[in-house]
Length: 265
Image (cartoon, rainbow, N blue to C red; front, side):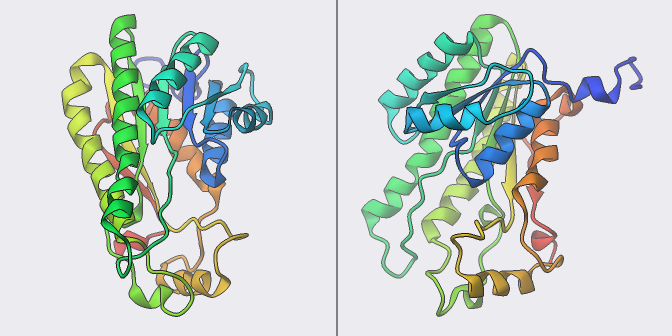
């Protein structure tokens, strides 16, 4: 039991909470959504494809009446309409996980100004949606938890030799994006603490989709990792539940990195 009489199981319990997970149909988004459902939350998955979102929500376990909505965090009108759809379906939002990411594959050698700039719309979408959740929480006179998805590549550079000859280098725009997300987390956390809205960042390390990533690149990345392997999606589940539950009630403005020791070198 905690000092105030609250048990550990109660601290991690998300029963009665509504969690919105953007990009919840993806490789890491699926594990994040499932973790929140298993902890007791009602999960709303967003995607640019409403039917895909609903299909992903239907696969979630747990006690919640999970659902999916259409929301493209790269388009301001879609953010607004999608958020209204979430409120109409679930009545409230207590937890936001800004997980969606529109990738841009060109590396520093040939990325255009427009491509680089467009990739930064991801963080604009994160901010806009987070502000909506903050305002919604203030109107309800309730708290809220926001988690941004950063990356180890928002903190350290990539190794050129890990990609040479097998794939494009880790895009410069991606590094700029993820570094910006981590610092935006700190900024919003300071401004919203008095509102009872906590803002933290979860930064995965190497979690490539093994069905899509070039095999030789994965082998090279494994050699760069202290654990000599890649992360598995379920290894983010404990961290995300901790971050959005009362178990982390005195934590805000922080970046938790799950990277197998990568950034410890």
